[in-house]
Amino acid sequence: MIGEQSGKSRSSRIGRTINRDHSQILSQGLPLLTILIGSLTPFLPVIAAGPVMPPFGFMIFIAWRLVRPGIFPLWIGFPLGAFDDLFSGQPFGTAILLWSLAMLALEAFEARFPWRGFWQDWVSAAALLTAYLGLSALIASAGTNLWHVQLILPQLLLSIMLFPIIARMVAAFDRIRLLRVRVID
Image 1 (spheres, rainbow, N blue to C red):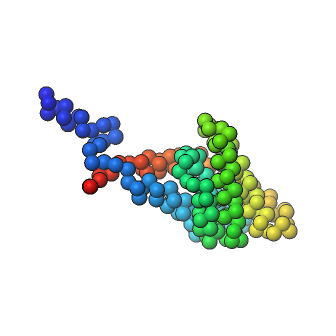
Image 2: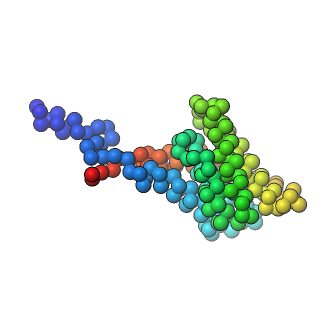
Image 3: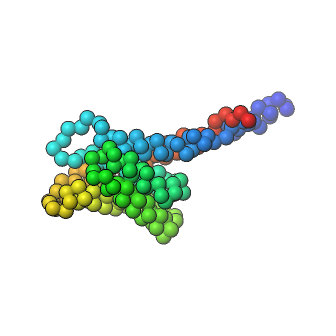
């Protein structure tokens, strides 16, 4: 009787709990690593006449911020945007500015609507993606050719349609991030 309970008392629905704790490397490094890998997607061999690849780094950044609102400090848009600028082909400083503004916009949105649902997150992500891609196109063309903005419509539609999949992927990474691993003191 006691032997049967002792085995069950040391485990829970998520597995063994004695000597288990959240890994600091996973909890702090996995979100940043996924964003940085998403920012490296311009290296994928995609040949197209116009821009069709969604900004995966920015989409993963937004998804992490919407899935876990307090995971990043406000200043994180600067270094992550700088890394994205190095690989995106945009003028340096574009992503730094736009990722920082997106972080501020998400913070204001979070303060205004603390309880949100799927549709509100999708609409806010679509608005941020529209602003990001539109302003990126204007900055890249230096405002001289405004007809270039219509070239980003396929990229924008693909980005908006892929965002729920990216958000689900980030939610799966969040479950991995919160895994309990063996701790030896």
